[in-house]
Length: 295
Image 1 (spheres, helix red, strand yellow):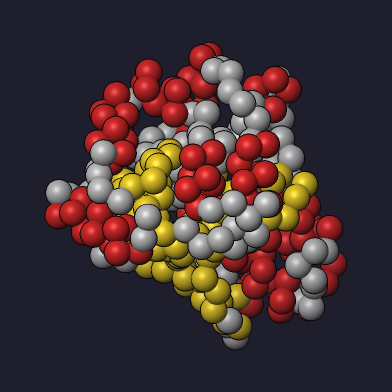
Image 2 (cartoon, helix red, strand yellow):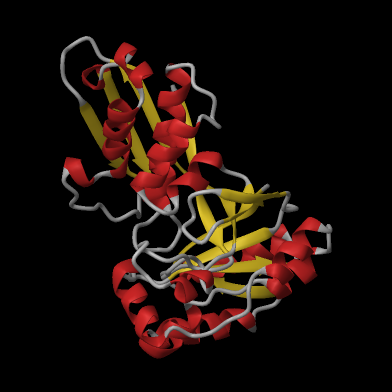
Protein backbone atom coordinates (compact mmCIF):
# COMPACT_ATOMS: atom_id res chain seq x y z
CA UNK A 1 0.00 0.00 0.00
CA UNK A 2 1.39 3.39 -0.98
CA UNK A 3 0.38 6.68 0.60
CA UNK A 4 1.42 10.24 -0.02
CA UNK A 5 1.44 12.45 3.07
CA UNK A 6 1.28 16.13 2.31
CA UNK A 7 2.88 19.04 4.06
CA UNK A 8 0.70 21.68 5.70
CA UNK A 9 0.21 25.40 5.98
CA UNK A 10 -1.45 27.10 8.95
CA UNK A 11 -3.09 30.50 9.30
CA UNK A 12 -2.31 30.50 13.01
CA UNK A 13 0.02 28.53 15.23
CA UNK A 14 -1.54 26.12 17.71
CA UNK A 15 -0.79 25.60 21.38
CA UNK A 16 1.60 22.76 22.14
CA UNK A 17 -0.10 21.42 25.27
CA UNK A 18 -3.43 21.46 27.02
CA UNK A 19 -1.80 23.01 30.08
CA UNK A 20 -1.37 26.36 28.33
CA UNK A 21 -3.94 28.90 29.41
CA UNK A 22 -7.10 29.33 27.35
CA UNK A 23 -6.33 32.88 26.22
CA UNK A 24 -3.07 31.76 24.65
CA UNK A 25 -4.70 28.79 22.97
CA UNK A 26 -7.59 30.85 21.62
CA UNK A 27 -5.01 33.22 20.22
CA UNK A 28 -3.49 30.38 18.21
CA UNK A 29 -6.56 28.92 16.51
CA UNK A 30 -6.93 29.05 12.74
CA UNK A 31 -7.59 27.23 9.45
CA UNK A 32 -5.18 24.64 8.12
CA UNK A 33 -4.66 23.53 4.54
CA UNK A 34 -2.46 21.01 2.75
CA UNK A 35 0.39 21.62 0.31
CA UNK A 36 1.29 19.56 -2.74
CA UNK A 37 4.68 18.53 -1.38
CA UNK A 38 4.87 15.13 0.16
CA UNK A 39 6.73 12.27 1.75
CA UNK A 40 5.87 8.78 0.53
CA UNK A 41 4.98 5.95 2.90
CA UNK A 42 4.96 2.36 1.66
CA UNK A 43 3.89 -0.65 3.71
CA UNK A 44 3.65 -4.34 2.93
CA UNK A 45 3.05 -7.62 4.81
CA UNK A 46 6.22 -9.25 6.02
CA UNK A 47 6.32 -12.98 6.66
CA UNK A 48 8.82 -12.96 9.51
CA UNK A 49 7.77 -11.95 13.07
CA UNK A 50 9.44 -8.57 13.15
CA UNK A 51 8.74 -4.90 12.53
CA UNK A 52 10.81 -2.95 10.05
CA UNK A 53 10.73 0.81 9.53
CA UNK A 54 13.19 2.15 7.00
CA UNK A 55 13.56 5.87 6.34
CA UNK A 56 15.06 6.95 3.02
CA UNK A 57 15.94 10.63 2.64
CA UNK A 58 15.63 12.41 -0.67
CA UNK A 59 18.66 14.22 -2.04
CA UNK A 60 19.11 17.45 -0.13
CA UNK A 61 16.90 16.39 2.78
CA UNK A 62 19.00 16.21 5.98
CA UNK A 63 18.82 12.91 7.81
CA UNK A 64 17.59 12.85 11.39
CA UNK A 65 19.00 10.81 14.25
CA UNK A 66 15.72 9.53 15.67
CA UNK A 67 15.10 6.48 17.83
CA UNK A 68 12.42 4.12 16.53
CA UNK A 69 10.15 4.73 19.52
CA UNK A 70 10.26 8.48 18.82
CA UNK A 71 9.30 8.16 15.17
CA UNK A 72 5.68 9.28 14.67
CA UNK A 73 5.06 6.58 12.06
CA UNK A 74 6.02 3.89 14.58
CA UNK A 75 4.05 5.61 17.35
CA UNK A 76 1.00 5.76 15.06
CA UNK A 77 1.22 2.02 14.48
CA UNK A 78 1.67 1.31 18.19
CA UNK A 79 -1.21 3.58 19.19
CA UNK A 80 -3.49 2.03 16.58
CA UNK A 81 -2.76 -1.48 17.79
CA UNK A 82 -3.37 -0.53 21.44
CA UNK A 83 -6.69 1.26 20.98
CA UNK A 84 -8.43 -0.46 18.07
CA UNK A 85 -9.56 -4.11 18.45
CA UNK A 86 -9.72 -4.61 14.69
CA UNK A 87 -5.93 -4.40 14.69
CA UNK A 88 -5.88 -7.99 15.99
CA UNK A 89 -6.10 -9.06 12.36
CA UNK A 90 -3.04 -6.95 11.66
CA UNK A 91 -0.22 -7.73 14.05
CA UNK A 92 2.33 -4.94 14.38
CA UNK A 93 4.97 -7.59 13.78
CA UNK A 94 3.78 -8.19 10.21
CA UNK A 95 4.32 -4.77 8.71
CA UNK A 96 7.36 -3.51 6.85
CA UNK A 97 7.32 0.24 6.27
CA UNK A 98 9.51 2.40 4.09
CA UNK A 99 9.27 6.16 4.53
CA UNK A 100 10.67 8.31 1.74
CA UNK A 101 11.37 11.72 3.30
CA UNK A 102 11.26 14.92 1.28
CA UNK A 103 9.68 17.32 3.77
CA UNK A 104 12.50 18.87 5.83
CA UNK A 105 12.43 18.80 9.62
CA UNK A 106 12.13 21.90 11.84
CA UNK A 107 10.60 23.67 8.87
CA UNK A 108 7.03 24.21 10.11
CA UNK A 109 5.64 22.01 7.33
CA UNK A 110 4.26 19.25 9.55
CA UNK A 111 6.27 16.45 7.94
CA UNK A 112 6.25 14.12 10.95
CA UNK A 113 2.54 14.70 11.58
CA UNK A 114 1.80 14.08 7.90
CA UNK A 115 3.73 10.80 8.07
CA UNK A 116 1.71 9.72 11.12
CA UNK A 117 -1.57 10.68 9.44
CA UNK A 118 -0.65 8.64 6.38
CA UNK A 119 0.18 5.64 8.56
CA UNK A 120 -3.19 5.85 10.33
CA UNK A 121 -5.00 6.08 7.00
CA UNK A 122 -3.11 3.05 5.78
CA UNK A 123 -3.86 1.00 8.91
CA UNK A 124 -7.49 2.05 8.90
CA UNK A 125 -7.90 0.98 5.30
CA UNK A 126 -6.26 -2.38 5.94
CA UNK A 127 -8.63 -2.97 8.87
CA UNK A 128 -11.75 -1.74 7.08
CA UNK A 129 -12.24 1.41 9.19
CA UNK A 130 -13.90 4.58 7.97
CA UNK A 131 -11.75 7.69 8.15
CA UNK A 132 -14.33 9.32 10.44
CA UNK A 133 -14.18 6.45 12.95
CA UNK A 134 -13.86 8.25 16.33
CA UNK A 135 -11.30 5.71 17.54
CA UNK A 136 -9.04 6.53 14.61
CA UNK A 137 -9.48 10.22 15.34
CA UNK A 138 -8.61 9.60 19.01
CA UNK A 139 -5.37 7.86 18.09
CA UNK A 140 -4.48 10.84 15.91
CA UNK A 141 -5.24 13.33 18.69
CA UNK A 142 -3.05 11.43 21.15
CA UNK A 143 -0.10 11.56 18.77
CA UNK A 144 0.03 15.33 18.44
CA UNK A 145 -1.96 18.46 17.77
CA UNK A 146 -1.37 18.46 14.00
CA UNK A 147 -2.03 14.77 13.36
CA UNK A 148 -5.88 14.94 13.24
CA UNK A 149 -5.63 17.51 10.45
CA UNK A 150 -3.03 15.44 8.61
CA UNK A 151 -5.26 12.36 8.96
CA UNK A 152 -8.32 14.14 7.57
CA UNK A 153 -6.59 16.35 5.00
CA UNK A 154 -8.20 19.08 2.96
CA UNK A 155 -8.76 22.49 4.50
CA UNK A 156 -10.59 23.16 7.74
CA UNK A 157 -10.93 25.11 10.96
CA UNK A 158 -10.07 23.08 14.05
CA UNK A 159 -10.77 23.69 17.72
CA UNK A 160 -8.21 25.31 19.99
CA UNK A 161 -6.64 21.96 20.87
CA UNK A 162 -6.64 21.00 17.18
CA UNK A 163 -8.47 17.76 18.02
CA UNK A 164 -11.82 18.32 16.32
CA UNK A 165 -12.85 19.77 12.99
CA UNK A 166 -15.15 22.76 13.54
CA UNK A 167 -15.74 23.73 9.93
CA UNK A 168 -14.81 22.10 6.64
CA UNK A 169 -13.58 24.65 4.12
CA UNK A 170 -13.01 24.46 0.38
CA UNK A 171 -9.87 26.40 -0.43
CA UNK A 172 -9.32 27.31 -4.10
CA UNK A 173 -5.91 26.23 -5.42
CA UNK A 174 -3.29 28.80 -4.49
CA UNK A 175 0.07 28.96 -6.22
CA UNK A 176 2.77 28.94 -3.57
CA UNK A 177 6.51 28.80 -3.17
CA UNK A 178 8.15 27.35 -0.07
CA UNK A 179 11.43 28.98 0.91
CA UNK A 180 13.43 27.59 3.83
CA UNK A 181 16.76 28.94 5.02
CA UNK A 182 19.58 26.48 5.76
CA UNK A 183 18.63 26.18 9.43
CA UNK A 184 15.63 24.96 11.38
CA UNK A 185 13.69 26.31 14.33
CA UNK A 186 12.79 24.25 17.37
CA UNK A 187 9.01 24.22 17.76
CA UNK A 188 9.25 23.77 21.53
CA UNK A 189 11.68 26.67 21.92
CA UNK A 190 9.57 28.98 19.78
CA UNK A 191 6.40 28.15 21.73
CA UNK A 192 8.21 28.85 25.00
CA UNK A 193 9.12 32.25 23.62
CA UNK A 194 5.53 32.73 22.47
CA UNK A 195 4.23 31.90 25.94
CA UNK A 196 6.51 34.59 27.38
CA UNK A 197 5.65 37.14 24.75
CA UNK A 198 2.04 36.05 24.01
CA UNK A 199 1.19 38.69 21.39
CA UNK A 200 -2.49 39.47 21.02
CA UNK A 201 -3.97 39.00 17.58
CA UNK A 202 -7.24 38.83 15.73
CA UNK A 203 -9.22 35.63 15.48
CA UNK A 204 -9.32 33.93 12.07
CA UNK A 205 -12.88 35.00 11.19
CA UNK A 206 -11.68 37.18 8.31
CA UNK A 207 -9.80 34.33 6.64
CA UNK A 208 -12.58 31.80 7.28
CA UNK A 209 -15.11 34.19 5.73
CA UNK A 210 -12.86 34.84 2.73
CA UNK A 211 -12.56 31.10 2.03
CA UNK A 212 -16.15 30.15 2.84
CA UNK A 213 -17.67 32.89 0.65
CA UNK A 214 -15.45 32.17 -2.32
CA UNK A 215 -13.57 35.45 -2.30
CA UNK A 216 -10.68 35.86 -4.77
CA UNK A 217 -7.23 34.64 -3.86
CA UNK A 218 -6.03 38.20 -3.29
CA UNK A 219 -8.55 38.58 -0.44
CA UNK A 220 -7.62 35.16 0.98
CA UNK A 221 -3.93 36.02 0.87
CA UNK A 222 -4.53 39.40 2.52
CA UNK A 223 -6.28 37.66 5.45
CA UNK A 224 -3.46 35.19 6.12
CA UNK A 225 -1.47 35.66 9.31
CA UNK A 226 0.57 33.66 11.78
CA UNK A 227 0.76 34.88 15.39
CA UNK A 228 4.17 33.29 15.80
CA UNK A 229 5.73 35.76 13.39
CA UNK A 230 5.73 38.34 16.17
CA UNK A 231 8.09 36.02 18.05
CA UNK A 232 10.20 35.52 14.91
CA UNK A 233 10.72 39.29 14.81
CA UNK A 234 12.13 39.11 18.35
CA UNK A 235 14.05 35.82 18.22
CA UNK A 236 15.05 35.32 14.57
CA UNK A 237 15.68 38.67 12.86
CA UNK A 238 17.44 37.02 9.88
CA UNK A 239 14.28 35.10 9.03
CA UNK A 240 12.29 38.30 9.39
CA UNK A 241 14.59 40.00 6.88
CA UNK A 242 14.17 37.08 4.48
CA UNK A 243 10.39 37.42 4.72
CA UNK A 244 10.55 41.15 3.99
CA UNK A 245 12.77 40.49 0.99
CA UNK A 246 10.31 37.91 -0.35
CA UNK A 247 7.44 40.36 0.03
CA UNK A 248 9.21 42.68 -2.40
CA UNK A 249 9.59 40.02 -5.09
CA UNK A 250 7.59 40.31 -8.30
CA UNK A 251 4.29 38.40 -8.38
CA UNK A 252 4.04 37.91 -4.58
CA UNK A 253 0.66 38.34 -2.86
CA UNK A 254 1.78 37.61 0.71
CA UNK A 255 4.40 35.85 2.81
CA UNK A 256 3.39 33.85 5.89
CA UNK A 257 5.40 31.80 8.36
CA UNK A 258 4.78 28.06 7.95
CA UNK A 259 3.77 26.73 11.35
CA UNK A 260 6.62 27.51 13.72
CA UNK A 261 9.15 27.96 10.90
CA UNK A 262 11.71 28.12 9.59
CA UNK A 263 9.95 27.80 6.21
CA UNK A 264 8.10 30.71 4.68
CA UNK A 265 5.05 30.19 2.50
CA UNK A 266 4.90 32.66 -0.38
CA UNK A 267 1.47 33.02 -1.98
CA UNK A 268 2.01 34.05 -5.60
CA UNK A 269 -0.10 35.50 -8.41
CA UNK A 270 0.56 32.50 -10.68
CA UNK A 271 2.33 29.16 -10.93
CA UNK A 272 4.88 30.79 -13.23
CA UNK A 273 5.68 33.39 -10.55
CA UNK A 274 5.95 30.70 -7.86
CA UNK A 275 8.29 28.55 -9.95
CA UNK A 276 10.46 31.51 -10.88
CA UNK A 277 10.79 32.59 -7.25
CA UNK A 278 11.55 29.06 -6.04
CA UNK A 279 14.20 28.69 -8.73
CA UNK A 280 15.89 32.00 -7.81
CA UNK A 281 16.10 31.13 -4.13
CA UNK A 282 17.27 27.57 -4.80
CA UNK A 283 20.24 29.04 -6.67
CA UNK A 284 21.00 31.10 -3.56
CA UNK A 285 21.21 27.96 -1.40
CA UNK A 286 17.71 27.87 0.09
CA UNK A 287 15.47 24.83 0.14
CA UNK A 288 12.63 25.87 -2.15
CA UNK A 289 9.66 24.32 -3.89
CA UNK A 290 6.79 25.57 -6.03
CA UNK A 291 3.37 23.94 -5.77
CA UNK A 292 -0.28 24.45 -4.94
CA UNK A 293 -2.55 24.19 -1.92
CA UNK A 294 -4.89 21.19 -1.66
CA UNK A 295 -8.57 21.78 -0.92
